[in-house]
Length: 248
Length: 248
DNA sequence: ACCTGAACACCGTTCAAGT
DNA sequence: ACCTGAACACCGTTCAAGT
Image (tube, rainbow over all chains, first blue to last red; front, side, top):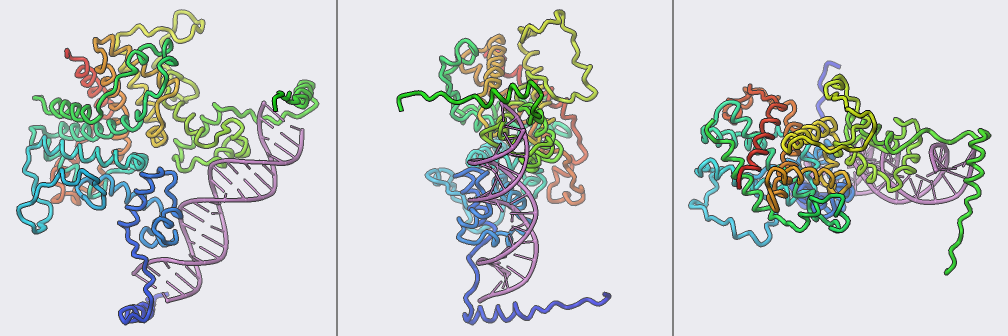
């Protein structure tokens, strides 16, 4: 009862030696948290959230489903958390196939050394607009993961870092106290709301105008109107930022 | 092949007769789509969406789970659809326990006869604000159902009726063409974004200020600031509406 | 440390059957 | 018409075992 029993860790040591000597085939499929998250997102994007299954995910990784629990001991809920963190954290670039717009954002850094996150010297509104566009792109690209994002609290490191950047920018814009918090909330709400509206409205109205006519005359009258979501988002964003920072 | 075969509906007739005569105990638990939806929402609100299970729902209704399929033959997905319709359709009052604010909205109608939906004679901005507040209340009350709402297309009757009301109001406000569509999108996005932000931020920041200090100085500086979500929503709503209808 | 295999409790859904 | 009971395929998770 009172004595601490030392665990026998002899076996692992022997295994390590054997592995180094090459006398034992390493039971290692090259699994990692990052690889799991990437593959999970591929399933979500391709087949939808409901088809993301531990067993299917294992198949995609060419591994038994139970192997995933070694990297996410708390199970699927922890995996969801990690997915949200990944999608939400705009600052990390990793793993995304950028497709053909890869060269677009290329601004060659002066020093090739990796000196960590440099200070962003752009004015406050450019910084906020850049974040908003990047965040929106992430959400649209992985819109299948939106249900996960909703009821997960933004209390991770990445979320706090982002919030700090926002608060710093709005402070630089001349706001202070509650106005800063209000502005931060408005900015986050704007992006989320715009993305969800766009996702929901995708492929609408697929209704036959004739079926609408009479019952919903105002909808029917505007049935041909198509708006450019990208343009609309940027316009609304600029309007919002200038409204938030008007002299109060 | 070419001949239409008449179905034998003798048995049901006999059953009906027997039921009327009382000679047969009616195998009827009083189940209905409305009762199922109400009970499903009670589970969602009380225990969360993930715990809404056909079997658990059956238990709550004091019925075998399989009985639900008689009212929703297409299964759980159809039930989800119905739940979204219910939560989303602000015009129907049914089934919600209004708690203690029941008497607040009481404006006694002049004619007690039920003449269907009367024309709303209030000015356009009051109508839109009333809808926005009612919709927000619905979403907040059933915030557990938010993930369901996201990727369901708003192409139901109720959604089109709401959209028609919005377009009519914005037209009355002097907008036309694409501006009406833009305004409608902005209004819907605003409510959704505000609600999701509020739900996500609930109970934040629960962080110890000391833990934040240094790493996130701007967040730490504002850690005590608490905003009234209701007030903030109404302020933002008024600002949005006036911004959308400024002379263009 | 990293992964497998068998097992358990639970889930959505189907289908024949009861009244 | 409305509900039950048994059954099937699939799911998340645990746990002992393998290397």
